[in-house]
Length: 75
Image 1: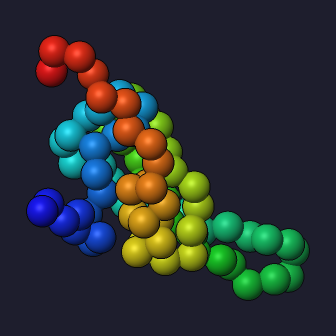
Image 2 (image 1 turned 90 degrees about the vertical axis):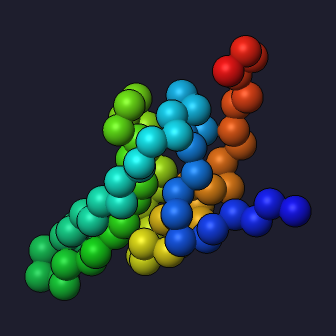
Image 3 (image 1 turned 45 degrees about the horizontal axis):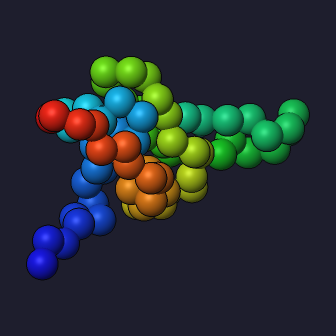
């Protein structure tokens, strides 16, 4: 049985690129005077698709890995 490594992003759910996806950190100001909030997301190097913003890198990977994958014919 193959198990998915929850610490590594799977291939891109949009273009099926299996190279390295990047975990990005985004700092956001929610409102003037409020503290900055760190948010993480996964982005594909090939097509630029990005996953949802999450509070931890682990959650960003988990959300990315939950997206349905297209299986391309012949490849």
